[in-house]
Image (cartoon, rainbow, N blue to C red; front, side):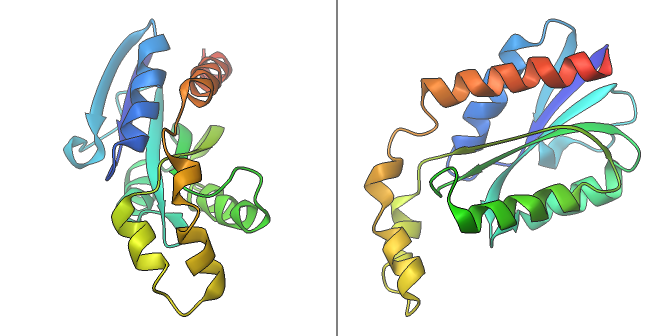
Length: 165
């Protein structure tokens, strides 16, 4: 089996998860930023990682999936600053899965990442009290994804690979 791990990262959170996934793959494997991937046709499984931007997948990742992953086996992983299990987050995660509707989605993983100081500072200045409050929760995200979340990513990777092999 030939496996690709590709990702978009802004703050490094998604790359940490990509590296954890890549580390457990024993088959032939490649890891590359999404901007360097032209085609996924030669892979049996592609792990695609994205930060949550604008309450869904980053547009670059969304376009990548729409243009390159139709009918292909993909496992999608997403990082976000929201507390896991937060009610609004569930709808945003559903929109991420919907973006992969044209692909054969063999797995989905999400975890909290560390909110950047710049984002938190911008959010606390917003008129929306919910977003301002969320920006004030930055300290609760520090150090994420932690070792527990990265281990969950490894388990996810093994499960996704078992569905394809």
